[in-house]
Length: 70
Image (cartoon, rainbow, N blue to C red):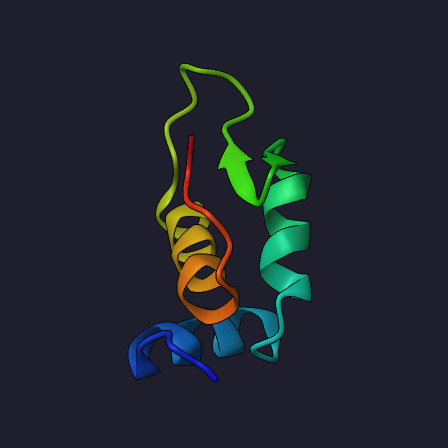
């Protein structure tokens, strides 16, 4: 059952055209993030997470029970 806020679902839907996990996961992988045990790892320790990257991580955590950023 969806848990993300209406605003976050709307923002993700507008950006990716739907509210599946495919767009946000592909976006994060495309920006160098790695997935380890359902948690996201930044491309480099010094990487500053953008607003869209943070929105994708938040959406995946709340909507699909991914872990957060480690």
